[in-house]
Image 1 (spheres, rainbow, N blue to C red):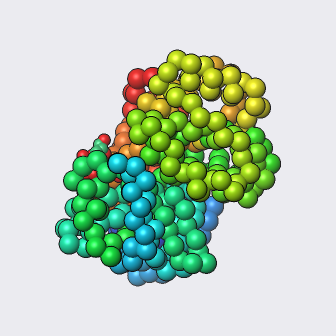
Image 2 (cartoon, rainbow, N blue to C red; image 1 turned 180 degrees about the vertical axis):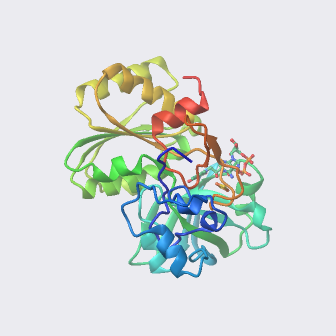
Image 3 (cartoon, rainbow, N blue to C red; image 1 turned 120 degrees about the vertical axis):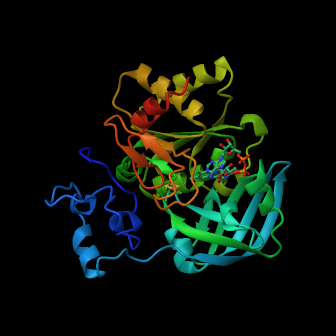
Length: 322
Ligand SMILES: Cc1cc2nc3c(=O)[nH]c(=O)nc-3n(C[C@H](O)[C@H](O)[C@H](O)COP(=O)(O)OP(=O)(O)OC[C@H]3O[C@@H](n4cnc5c(N)ncnc54)[C@H](O)[C@@H]3O)c2cc1C
Ligand code: FES
């Protein structure tokens, strides 16, 4: 792999992973089967860790049983789950971009469904998730009695996370549509901690509902509702962007939605950092099953459950129409 890629799990307790054992590490040239060291990773040496682990991967994520504290049908299609987890897991899931796989204990492993963390409280050991009920995996979540299986923590739900983390004391524009309003809550909380001023554009989407009010009502931010599917909404968004001196835009929605936001940014001809939610299909979350595979501009096939690609590069590669 000649491209410089970055891995969300590098340096975490889950690194080195299965990919190190098969010589497919995203970062380490030695763990790609080469005989020389040529990485851009500035943390603890992945190869050395692998060697110390006896040429084996580090810990793997386990499946835990979470108690369903509350299950609230906030909309015909949306259920908000409040789940009890360990305080450690709740803390690990506070990062923007955090997600878990959920499953009904009565169902086989292939019912695992990726779900973003909308909120996490490490003091009470609670996580909140908003699930839109669409097909077999999400419908099966409704069958859960008082327990649900949780596999995590996973972190690659946001692409461009580094940009988000380095933004301090700036103006930030967050635009989210439909169910993707959910992962915006953690991003907002993180950005507020770093003294950023936030404008939150909320598009109710096809659901016709903004279900995050309870989570943002006490936060210091400006909220605006608009519809990106209407020409007026897109124009209003462009005007807000032009007049706000924003240094970072976070887009949460489908790839088509990201494209609309990106177009407005491109028209500005200014260097605005762009961060998007990761809409790849995810099944294992471990870089193995291949459901999230994406071909980079350098011609490499990478697994988007692990790889942090530049938002613009990903959207270009997906050839989504605006
Ligand atoms: C990192 C991440 C975070 C997510 N967070 C949330 C969330 O907070 N709330 C929420 O309601 N949904 C979320 N999703 C989407 C959710 O996982 C899918 O809606 C769900 O997998 C659909 O499965 P299904 O069997 O119910 O429906 P299906 O009928 O199988 O699919 C319905 C739609 O979901 C897509 N989809 C199917 N399987 C997957 C999969 N394994 N990964 C991603 N997309 C899939 C399909 O392409 C289709 O567009 C997230 C997805 C990812 C990757
Ligand atoms: S979800 Fe299995 S390889 Fe990414």
